[in-house]
Image 1 (cartoon, rainbow, N blue to C red):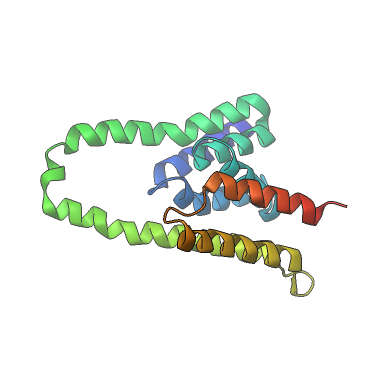
Image 2 (cartoon, rainbow, N blue to C red; image 1 turned 180 degrees about the horizontal axis):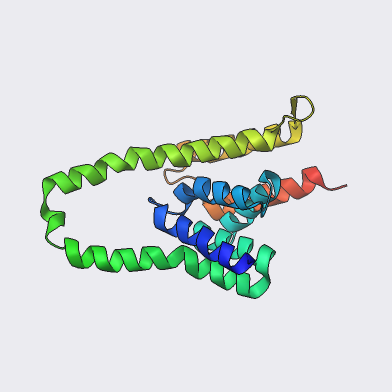
Amino acid sequence: MIYLELLLGFLKVGLFSFGGGYAAVPLIRETVLSYGWLDDSRLADLIAVSESTPGPIMVNLATYVGATQGGVLGAVIATVSSILPAFLIVIVFMKLMQKAFKNEHINAALDGVKPAIAGLILATGVYMAVNNMITFMPVISFDIKAVALTSVLAVIYFGSRKVVKKGISPILLIVISAIAGVALYTG
């Protein structure tokens, strides 16, 4: 039964995700929570791992969720289910739309979708940051270490853009955050 649920759940994610992996995170969250596969805390951990490992976040996240629920076969089913719709849609779409991309109305519609994608990504980032720094049960409390670490990383990221035009490498920022996390949260 879990394999069928993984297939259907990640087919839905693959079919209705528009704008890349980060835009798919809210849909993945909704799917994972609705099936009861993971809670928000565990999902946040898997999102962090998915961001820091090579490959698209949606595929990594589908693989990790599938593996936690159904082992290797679950990972394969979730991964293939999440990418198959996009693969087929792109092939069919490109075949049908070769001439349409020269139409200014179609290009305008696609340009109109871009702010919605940016909003989804921003909302997910804000949601994750707030959940990382604030605990709501039983009373509202702040994880001062998480607030400090998030603030320092934001200063490093945005400050580096002032010093170096390209800014700090995302890889270096991940390494810095991992080292800081180990230093702050162990022992």
